[in-house]
Amino acid sequence: MKNASKSLQKGFTLIELMIVVAIVGILAAVALPAYQNYIKKAAYSEVLAAMGSVKTAISVCAAQNTSNAITGCDTATVVGVTLPSGITSGAVNTITITSGTAAIVAKPNNFKGIVDTDTCTLTPTGVDSKISWAYSGACVTNGYVKI
Image (cartoon, rainbow, N blue to C red; front, side, top):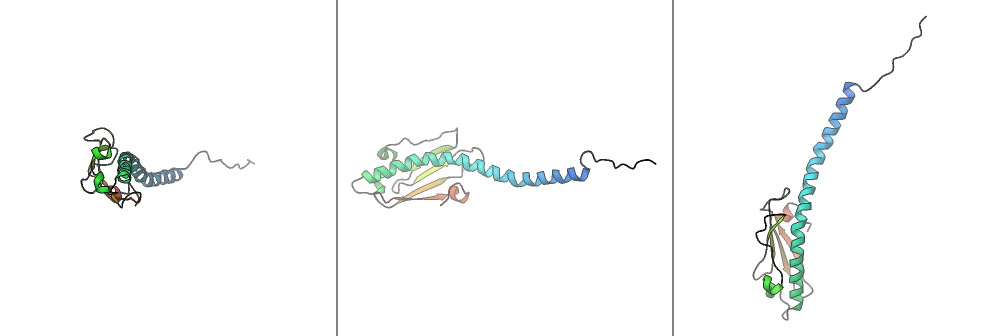
């Protein structure tokens, strides 16, 4: 009598391979949009950093201003900063200070997923050392900053 021996399975079946491919596809479909959003937020952080130095300069100006008014710190000359204007490389295109309110308005370039319409406004309120800042614009609606 011949010994009945079991054949050993070598490798994966077609259905097992199809299941693995389907799982990898589902994971990629979920991860790719999250990754693209992360890239946009990282690129927009350059815009926010550029606004930060202007924000600090306005805060210092308001603290040193004898009338303690933010409205006296509404130009780059008074504040003592050089504002970027018309830069075509990187994320930041222009930053301006609004006359009368000292609000900082940043316009980005089309860069790593962000578009030039994703403007951000940083508006100060208060006087002296009690200045509070509020973001508004596309930077808030697109989730680039948390309010």
